[in-house]
Amino acid sequence: MKTIEEIVNDALTKRTVLITGGAGSLGKAFCRLLHKDYNVVVIDNSEWAVAELQKEMPDVEAYLMDFEDWTFQEIPCEYIIHLAAYKHINLGEVSHKTFIENNINKTVKLFDEAFKYSVDVLFMSTDKAVEPISVYGYTKAIGEELAKGYGFAVARCGNILSSSGSVIPTWEKAIEEEKPIPITDERMVRWIIEDFDAVNQIWDMFKGGSKLIIPKCAEVRILDLLANVLKRHGYAQASDYKPGIYITGIREKEKLEEKLTWDNES
Image (cartoon, rainbow, N blue to C red; front, side, top):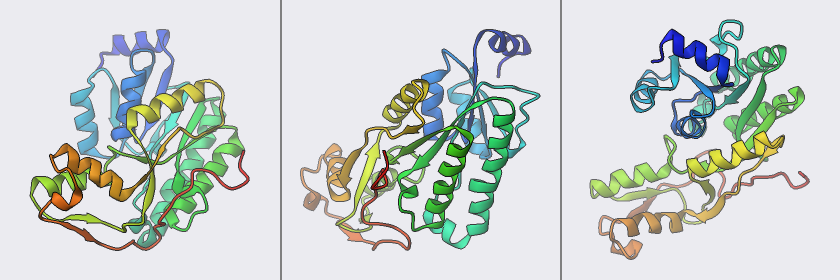
């Protein structure tokens, strides 16, 4: 952790960026991009993730706390990158009140305080917010509208390949253990992007004044993505992987295809 002298010096010489939920993979990517030019402060409610971030990037201030408890008067900032959200679709369907409280109600409080102190906000959204069918998608769609109402920027993105809960680590673990690889549906298509690519595109457009930011993602069939993962492990074709592949079936409130924009969205 930084000394008081270092914190004060940074506050006087660098603009401060607060990243909520910043100890995850996308937050870390933003930290790597910004920490040399900005005073980066991360808050996250995952003890393990904050501890890992402190080990990896000791020059980044990281606090174990809920984003609704941030006090702008005590530690002011110029920018907020709001990543903190509950995002697992299946959990949202059985814990909808919790998702609404976190993704909407607490976010409103954060936006109110940010607006009050003239803080510029970048709200991170998802392709699940376009024509939503899940509680998670609806909460992020409402979050987008709230951000727009305050004049803040919205970044809408596809799936971050290296994020927690993404499919690739699940496949990698199955291959390592020589177990059958699960996929939901052979017809499934997803928008995907690497974390470093996402944050570079998003920050450039944000600093350029864009209010709706949609980074260029690749549209990929799940089977093609799996084939690339297997090739990295020496399997020329999916059929060469002897433990095999099994279809789990599409989960409730999942789509076969996602969209990054609404039909009439400019």
